[in-house]
Length: 304
Length: 290
Image 1 (cartoon, rainbow over the protein chains, first blue to last red):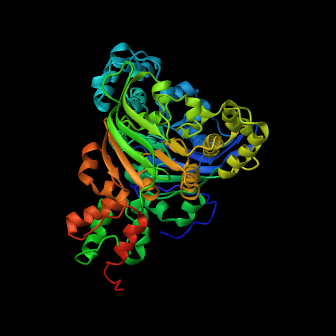
Image 2 (cartoon, rainbow over the protein chains, first blue to last red; image 1 turned 90 degrees about the horizontal axis):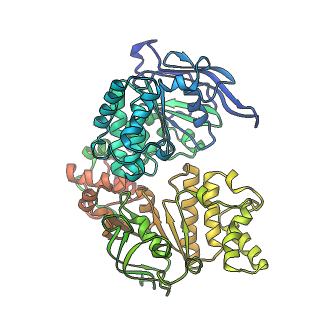
Image 3 (cartoon, rainbow over the protein chains, first blue to last red; image 1 turned 180 degrees about the horizontal axis):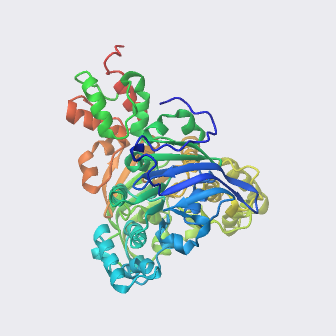
């Protein structure tokens, strides 16, 4: 598992071992996608292929400029392939306008201020579905469902700017939730958040999945990858250089070093002890404690 | 080690923003010594930024509200000193470097604060060169600030305050909008300024593992009050307090706590860094007789 991958790998999409569905439906198919920004002649994406199944939670990591955003902008049709093909929820993106794709792919901005503009949380939540042309009863029902799902009862009548930033972040996701997209793209959902909010957002992401949604998290937050993500796509220089479980990616020193990523501290500790434990690196404190606890002498003397 | 001379002193400071309810700072008393690296931690809204804005006098001089108590910074009273004057002593760096960029070139960006201080032209050039060298932006003088990467912009923001030769660097979540490379660069510069130049660093930051590694002291705020104040090991060993207010200690500490409570397998001081945890565990694991 720690075997290093030969650099740039034409990554063969593989369903994370959960390929039980065989060639079941994919919610996202990116097929040999290349994108060249016309003006700069910059090859921002270089023959990227990836397949994401309904209900998967996938992380996209890499430094700024590695191609993460260019990739996700292809999912909602903001960008069209220079070469290759992108299909989301069964629709090839070149065949539809951005507005039509918005019903299928919900994009949640990093900064909720870029997304919220109505006079109250409630009105903001109804904006998307109204825009999709749904009748008022259906809009109202979806708004109620979102308020319950995200726990927004106490702020529903407030102006979005009058509520705390963490709460606003939830409203930003809720405003997309009311459009019931099959696919959520979350841009840095946890950045700058404190521990409590991060935990809440992690739980929400899992609940979106249990509702059957596909969730794609673009983030620098390795803890988020360890906590909620099934697969991590590692971007580097416009190429997809790894598409594996968080555990496998963290253990791959070559990929981590090349992309300047550091695993969560607990995984780093597990990796350094690996020669002695002989176990795959842990992703959580509980996991590592239970793996090594029984092997310890009765007492550790602590920090000297 | 003798305790350094105090450079920041708050005595019973309370602040309430105009037209808001509750105290953003509630009876805060603290002393920070010259050359210390202090991490301010706490949930969003705990009062970290408010405390920082009191250090350079933006509160109460530019932000409305009611301030009580006394504040001393390097012999000055920031409540009575013009903010421009305070800038010579306290450099402030915010979370979004883009908002701090206003000029067409990197050199002009650094020059801006110096022009406001009336620094002569020749000295200005020397200070700009020195500040850009400190943040590893040599040769960037004529580049456009907004065309730089996030990490470079934040380093430029640091250079712009360093050119004023402050004794204190106050940073408000300076890496929260940066990618991993940018984060590493900014943390490295803060550490270097502290260790090599003896600059006092006050940093509000959520990244607990990073602060455990770099900070000499951690001050934890909750609802405007100081609830913990000590070395990283002292503060992060106070698991009950942290749990009560919703902060978590470094994972290295959490691991030792879990080993202690579940396997009776940790005695003595708790680790706060990767190295401390690994060293202690390696010495004790089966098959590793030393």
